[in-house]
Each structure stands twice: as structure tokens, then as C-alpha cells.
Length: 384
Ligand code: SF4
Ligand code: SF4
Image 1 (spheres, rainbow, N blue to C red):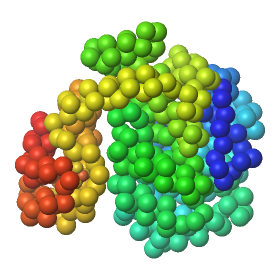
Image 2: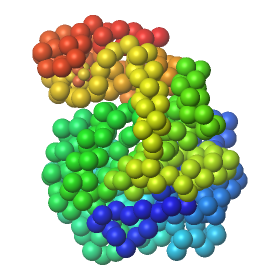
Image 3: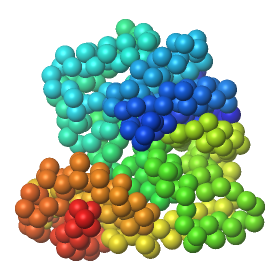
Image 4: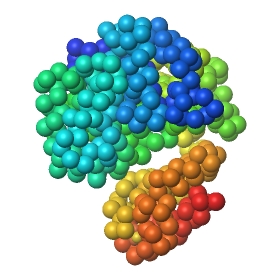
């Protein structure tokens, strides 16, 4: 395993591969029922491979991920070998006392008196407002002073301008966690966001390097592009190497569901050094990305310039879901997410509940997308 460091935390070596504890093996596909025997085997294999960064969150696996990690670490006496990261569910913070209550609950679940890396989970413009209004930063600073938190940062899901606003909103961030893979170089924070953070000494943790697993199962067209490399290489390896290519990235998280996946990914992270890919490799990856983009029904770059929508529609997210559903052939998954988290809640494109066809977004789109029409198309596709 290769190890990297965050610029502001030079004393800690972090494994280039981190274990994302959000897609552990489960029983009968039920996320709330972790298959503990299999998950424990994979966890221990990760430690054996030299992985030392384990990333959980309050909400993962229906709140079972943290207790699982805590139990495995305690049972095998691993506390000194692993760096535990977890995330505060900012959306559950309704008053100042909630920060304290949640952190203490998480410490108990993880069976530890110190969380090495604590993140504000999934910050967007609204949650950043909550953090500012309810004293979130003051609380984090206090918890770091009293030793319950080692270091803190945030994970992010919103547009690049909001990312910059959060980075600039506080000098003390030590790291950030963003979605990044060879398709999403300009999605949310993207390449520009990673460089922006690095210029301020904020290291990056990459999540979704395989885009939820989609980049591990590529279609024939992409397989034939990668075949031009001349040496056999699995699709997942291409994606992991791409994420590890960046110097600014300290660790790449993968939600490995089996020991086999873990061993394969660890082998990649043991040889992928920053800035080591050849021009030919990068060109092949760019062509694979173009292959997917050509299949996307909306030419949205998720730049976020159309935002905010006065009626609450999260335009780039709706288009991203629609594009992924079509290009990656994961309609079932994206439709389920859209129905659960967007439609009927003012975030989706339901013609009555959200998009009022006011037209305010139209002149702001550099791609000249017919947003109203495309939102209706996306909504119809994802709801059926
Ligand atoms: S046209 Fe629809 S999506 Fe665009 S700003 Fe108006 S309500 Fe929002
Ligand atoms: S719809 Fe246009 S402005 Fe909005 S995120 Fe997509 S490309 Fe950017």
C-alpha cells in the first residue's frame, strides 16, 4: 500500500485506498442488515493490505455502519492501526445542542473516545447555512480542543460556486471529500474544486471513484477503447488509477463489498503514484468518458450557473440523475432515488410541485439547454 498525507496534517500517513463503509455486504439486499461475517472478513483483509482509513457516517446502513466498525475494531484490538472517519448528519441538527448529542452518540457507537476525522456530511448551500447559524464550526473547534475529534472537514454535494464559498468561509478546514471520477471531472466540485482547495492547503478525499460501481462494469464500447492499451487491465483499475493520479488527493474511498474487491483495489493502490499515467492512458480514459457523455440525453455540465431556481428545483442534480440512468443503464436505481429524495419534495421537476416554467434559468445556461422541456422529459423518464 502506498500512503499519502494531507498538507495540514503532515504527521499522519493515510493509505491511498480508503474503505468506504457504506456498501458493506448485506443480507437479502437489505442495507439495514449488514452481513457481519462477510463484512468483517473484508474489513480485516483491508487492515492486512495496509488500508488504515475507514470512512463511515451516522446514516450509513440505516445507522448500523458505525456500530459495526466500532465492534470489529474493538474485537480485534485495531484502534491503533486504523484511522476512523465519520460524518455528522447536518440535516438532523435543529438546535445547537444537537452537535454535542450526535458526536457523543457517534463516539459511543464507534466504541472510542476519539474520532480521527470528523466530517460535516454532504454540505450544500442550505446545510452550510445551518452550520453557520447554529455554531457548527465553534462546536468542531471545541471538540478538537478537548480531543474528541482529531481533525475535521466536510463532504460536499452542490455546485462549484457553493464549494468555493464553503472553502472560503472558514480558514480551518483540514480536508474535504468530493465526488470525482473520469466522468465527473466537471461535476459538483470537480477538478477545479480539488485544485481550488489544494491552493488553500486543503487536501481531498475522493468518493465515488467508480461512480457507485458503474465504472467497474463498462459496456463493450468502452471495453474496446481500453483494449487499445495492449495490456489487460480491469475497468475498475482504470477508474481508480484516474482518481489516484492527482497529487492533491490523499485517499480514494471505495465501498468494497467483498474481500476479492478489496484485494484487487489494494493491489492498484499499491502501485498508483500521482502523475504517473502516460499520455496514451489519459487519452484512452478521455475517450471512454466521451463515449458515456455522447449517450447522455442532456448536455448538462452541472456547472450550476442556472441555480438557484426560485422554486427549489435542483436542476443539475435532476439532469445528472437522468443522464446516469440512460448512459449507465441504471434506470431502476436512479428512478428509486429520484422518487425518494426529489419528486414531490420541491427538488424535482414535477410540473406542479416544483418547476413553474418561469424561465428564469434559461438565459443563464451556457449550454443553451431547453431546461423546462428537458426537466419534464427527465421527470417522465425517472417516474416511469
Ligand atoms: S423554469 Fe423551472 S427550473 Fe427554471 S428557474 Fe423557473 S421554476 Fe426553476
Ligand atoms: S442546465 Fe445549464 S446552467 Fe444548469 S447546470 Fe446544466 S449546463 Fe449548467
